[in-house]
Length: 80
Image 1: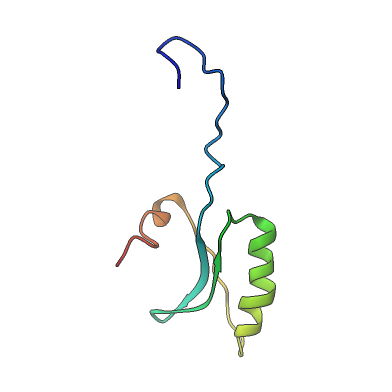
Image 2: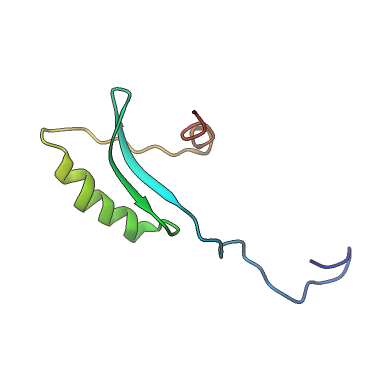
């Protein structure tokens, strides 16, 4: 941190924190194909989960809908 009007001498991106994340599917009020990660999720991690966890879990034909709009993201995991 720096005083108002002064530059900070250290650059902090805010991405350095270790995070715990869960990816999973949701169907008829049930969660499935859950996978826990102790790191930030990027497109490679998501693709590996999709290919190796979600797809093998689905036994019949499904339509997969992905939605994480900013408005919906507020409510996805905030429920107890």
